[in-house]
Image (cartoon, rainbow, N blue to C red):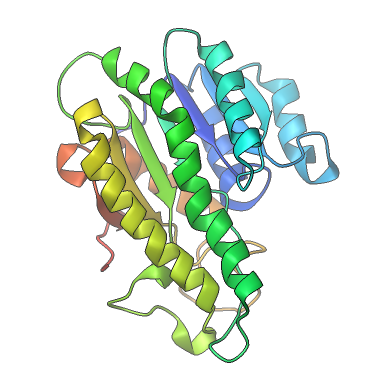
Length: 259
């Protein structure tokens, strides 16, 4: 596995956890991207303080306001990124923003399902649609044939919890709305891989591991991984993806996850 070489990357949910980890690692690459766009709900708020600190040290980091459940916010973000990139297009879109709760079959509500699905599944769909022109432009401007993440790609941050074949960590919690939203995101990824192949855009879903983040909860388990380990692993895998990998569901070590 090689090192990732991209001119431009957008990461959603970039103010904490895995998203912030991606931003840190991208900026720390020997050949960092010319543009790293870090999208979050409130760029000037307290929860984005670490991002603000990074932006003060890295002129190639641009913080973008984005609410993934609002189409107007998504369109504004795409326009803002497009202005910066001008004619070069966006190489890599990492749909990382997500929410979850531990709803069960007994207590899950319509509001739970709707809120989680809107963020975790519809959000990545709308973002991919909005940034498609920029992804196409990047693909058209890249030399060579075949697909790769240095050319143009959509990476959807899924979860093993969305696997229907192997219902992961059921004993720790049913997390019904979260599981359903990630299973749907996996299908979206597969559909995107079929629909966007002709445009030169690679699409893949990732299970980042059971990561030690706020969203990952506080349960101690030897299988848990740090943000650093997860993100470094995913970037290594992302750097090696090719045409044969589009439409796949992989973990942070590059292993195929069962649908």
